[in-house]
Image (cartoon, rainbow, N blue to C red; front, side, top):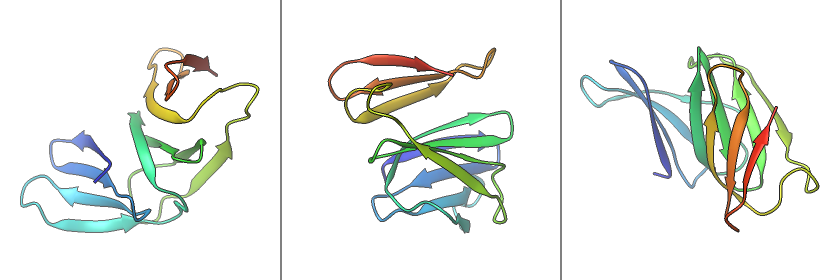
Length: 112
């Protein structure tokens, strides 16, 4: 397990080194389903409203439309001139939907 994100009182999402994003029941601990689309290990996750925002080890940011089995994923690679280093931490600022990104070199970047 690389990252855990609480979705609500009944659902938890986990990411693993094997590129899987799993959705679990917080009530009985059973696997509900796997989300499709990630092609790299996801080590950063954050919820914004109904969307799940993910960050991968290859500096790719993705957004799942919702936390459901049928959710679609759109993603983009961070450009090296906009973000230096390897993505290690991420938060979505709720008021303006900006991304606050942390890098392995200690840098912090605010992206829109």
